[in-house]
Amino acid sequence: MPTFKRNVAIETSSPVAKVENKLPVGNHTFQLVVEDNAGNRSRPVKTVVEVIRTATIDREGILEIIRENPGINLTRMARGLNVRPNALRLELLKMVEEEVIRKNSRGVYFII
Image 1 (tube, rainbow, N blue to C red):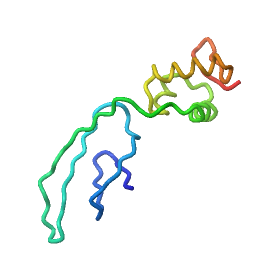
Image 2 (image 1 turned 120 degrees about the vertical axis):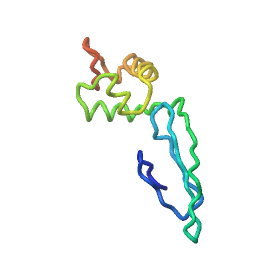
Image 3 (image 1 turned 90 degrees about the vertical axis):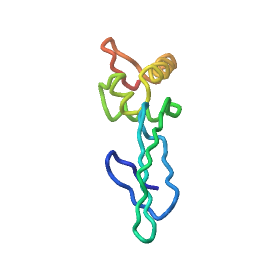
């Protein structure tokens, strides 16, 4: 499966490209140009993909990012996990209530 990077062309002999949802929330434009065996290229075709939400929040991912980034706050954690801060906030509140993690007065999370 190709890894898509901004402004970097992907060449493949397969007519299929699978895109896993690793994109942040928002609009993303993909452009496709097809080349036949004779080297003739099609006109570019663009499509916009809107990511409106990401996959469920993985608790192990939360614990890992806290472990690897002592003193991390909600905003940085949300960016690192590629989730919306409000969705992450709800999961963090549950984890605090369950005494899996703790939050100090400065909004910094750490593992108990």
